[in-house]
Length: 204
Image (cartoon, rainbow, N blue to C red; front, side, top):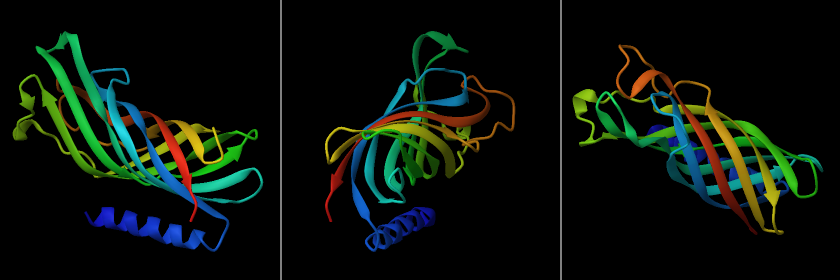
């Protein structure tokens, strides 16, 4: 929890410092499609929400820097007709507070390329099988910290409305495989995320 308060504090400092510069900010809402590389499933089948806010400042006519604070739902999901070691259902639900920091490079009047890093703090991580939540003795801890590289595009729809399309991938494992592979877990695990969000700019 201390890490969470640190993230909020850093975001607040960045927001205040921006008022002395050319500054804008607003709210973010969107959807995530995620998977976890290193489990025994594939495909972006785990849906989730993305909620938060952003601040950014212009560095030049074509480049701007931004920071966001977001609640991000990630994880993995398999509800298939194909069983793995007798198990059909598997759901991994991961909830994070993410603090993406990025550069935006305008390639045209309406379109920008985004590149950056997204540190995150895990609020909760829970796994389920056919019988409900995995028993405590079968649960393996996740890392509290996640660091993802991000790459995406931003499209300006109106003066205040923008749409972001991004991909993000963990630089460090969110969970390391230190024993024998399990029916749902074969190697070190990494968040693999596709995200579509709408940003609405507010005037301060």
